[in-house]
Image (tube, rainbow, N blue to C red; front, side, top):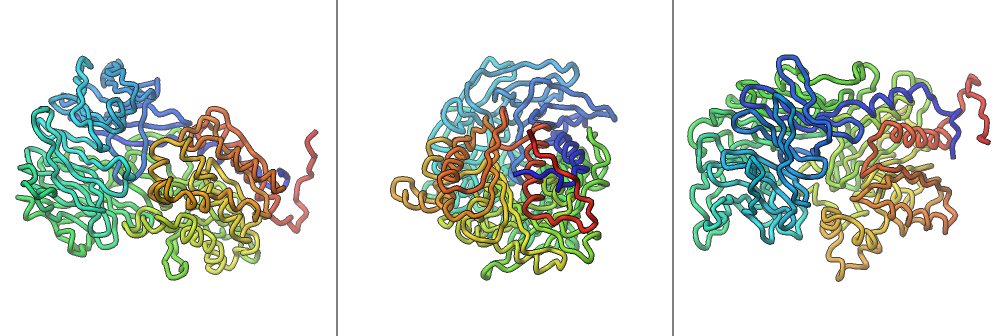
Length: 637
């Protein structure tokens, strides 16, 4: 499949450098202003400490910390006295590290994952699978006591202390995390009942944040208006008998057609900082919340203009994605990434970077994208594109379509070094936010439920024509497609359902939904249930929607790439796909990567995988230069 002489290898170094760039996952500010943060490099995440210009590595055995989006739970938290930091080990156990000495103490031996924590005076609250899936427990700081405080038919998430109780969200076991969730208060006294503070059918509550110094008030997010917005609730009493939803929430802050989330109170409890996501960008706003919650903020029913509102300050804007904002006295820190800079901790208002980078100078070497929208059978689709460069004037360039995974993720102005690598090679690269993408309201996020491989696939296929129509230099006849996970299955679907592409590369995708039910973890199973229905009663839907069914209609070469340590999507999915490709004589190749989980992280594997894909596209999409500079090719022995 490869003709390496057709590809410019000068950019292999750029790909290698971006593959090992430091990526901050989340940060937490200690009582004395020191910043603890989780930083990932090549599949290894550890805790670091930034203070007074110094940057110290606290752990070397690996930690668990993942970045999903605007409703992330906390993966690390400071002790109330500021001496230690709680975190989740690489083995999914709870541990603490001394911020001065780096001494690590593992507190649990639960044999169950931990996916969120909070350290308060009564102990460390954790979400763990040790008692039942996503149960809620409290661990004493010395590890001598581990007690389940919510172990029932619900999945709990994002715990935060309020006095002697834990405020969290919970959802039904059968629901995916982004479909429906309630806000609850869980007492550590087992004799008291769990109080449901807010619950509405089909509405997702998230990001509970108790107000400092207040034993009752809680700010939280829900999407009942169609977009995430911030609300407050008194929560002083459990729901009245016959009133399961408890007190009515009070609108605090919303912006029209914008996902507002990740609220954080300042110490005085009179300001909240939030993230605001719209059109692929996530900004940071600070909102004044004086007095009682009943008098708080512009309100979620108002179309607030954050640029002119008296009680709102826009701290960070522009072509960037900010996450996990935290107060540090009067200033706000956030984890910021841009198309040319990997995630780092910054002062949100000034943009000053507070954590160092192992790879300097990337911004000058990476091309910047832009955004546009296009019509897909009456639905407006947002896309981020690396357009043809200025050197494309007078000639045409091939196009690559890169659908994201998830499917409820979104592509925006974040650090996508794979897309940037292909743009540096001279391709136009478009990343469509097809139906089912996050960040564009609840209805859009749910738009492919029961229609997986329908409208969303149409959006991806139409992205090629829309980009070619927008940019005169794009050659709409030379188009390839590649993507990972949900983007991998979309790649196979697109090749089998259209003649729009000349070649494709599918990374660690799901191709046979029927067999995937047996092989995946609970998150994968929940996703299938939401998208395709009940497995028993809707088995035909699973079979009909599977990308593997389209293989007989694929006429173009397909590269299949998968990590052998993938637990979310086992490599058996790619093996099944390859069997079907062989049966129908489709030109293909399978590349296996030892030790890689769901997503490629090791430098040598990223370099091998993506340069092979670049060779594939060079062979099937590039044209030989007219100046005769194409390098000679020596076939391998």
